[in-house]
Length: 320
Length: 320
Image 1 (cartoon, helix red, strand yellow):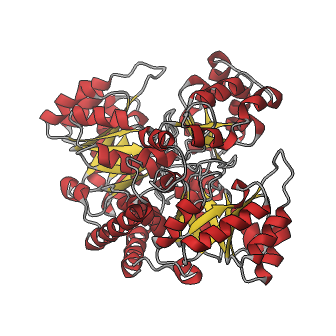
Image 2: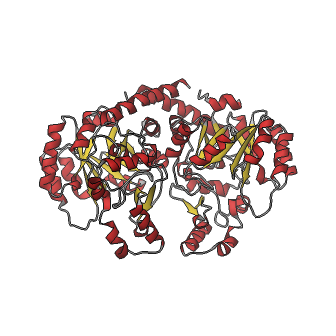
């Protein structure tokens, strides 16, 4: 049942990958995804040091004996990050799946591959996907315009990016950005993907370690309730259209520079809101798929529902 | 084989609808689509008077004995248009399928329905789709962010709009914007659509009555070669990223007003280019799907390929 290449190569039951979300993709959520037959991924940078990451990986191993991954996002950040230390912990703890995102991961590829780590690289364009294939990545997770967080500057949607990535690459492609249910899951497979990555959908599950108010804000958001900000800085970000995001957008429209915007961006990636439950005082990465999300199920309920509904959709298509 | 509701209700063989394109959707193209088992649609406003439209409808009837439609786009235009005269010709010639687009078609609905005309309304948002359903339209053709021409101002992609329209409406939904091949066709059906509408894909066929240079420009365009212009006028248009479009975009970025832009918009909708073959001196509505288009087949080759490949995709999904 939907036993695609990625299921075989990563030894997972269903080709459903949980997106690496800052402050959210921790053991509570990610182990539930792996236990339900998908691929849970914890985000390394949600942990302030490589030691903290090591503790979290140990916690994951206690919580699931199924495969899981670690996301490591290579972005310019305000604080310098010792990526080598994080990578060493990942290898030392014998994590077998790494998701890279952001900048070119070439520097770390040899080390990861020498240790038989499978590498999923997440990117937002065909040219970056080809580069990642060339340097040895095993899977591409291609992120369309719809995605939460950083969709890039090309504004190409998943409906185009997925089939174009599939036809441009030899390695398998995971569809990401705009997927939240069985309909999108089957669509992704029809477009040639080996599976789907879902972030926002897993955010609004019982197990996600964030304040209920924020989950409810996702449920209440329509397809028109996300907004692209920071385009003027060429660092576009799709976030929930809350008061802060609207303020940033307005300031950008009036030509505000980084110096003026910076004070508003300190809550970037929502940590403050995730803890306090205040939906308006930090920027919350939120995918357009929020418009499809109407409930806060448990992870296993969600995955079982997607697989069983996907099966009926395929049967319906087959009978047409 | 893909015998969906729209096939039954409109008596067509395949649920593939050819989009109404200004200056392009004429008998040469549209009769070929109908003859190949899809639904060809001619655009009323490509003809300068209701008498010219009458001649074209007569020409269509000579060229095909299969069902076809007439598109009538209700937009504010520079020259006043006698829509009633066009509608009267449509009824008088016993056309049985009308596609409305642009403004609310309410004024004409009763007359069309009294004459047993099936109405497809094309729109870009769920709220407009609901309104169209309420006033009696029979189908919604929902146009995602990817579409050529006017995607609206909400920037919601087909991946979201299609399933949301399906779950929000009782009438069947046609997926439009970003579709060009069998993969997208199956994805659309998986998302719950009763069929797909394709414009740009039919533009690049042997039968489309436009200069070969423009078809080749579509073939050469990548997924990054369309651009949204006229957003500053709240009349956003997706066009081929040619010299003129880039100039308009730059001027808008610098705050140009309608008066300054107007002289550049006289070639709006590409008529000049379609005749001369100059790819740079008029604005050419072009969907993001251009990135998927690699050839200029005949209409029947195209439709047969989509249906046969779609069948294999569904068989593959079924065997997973």
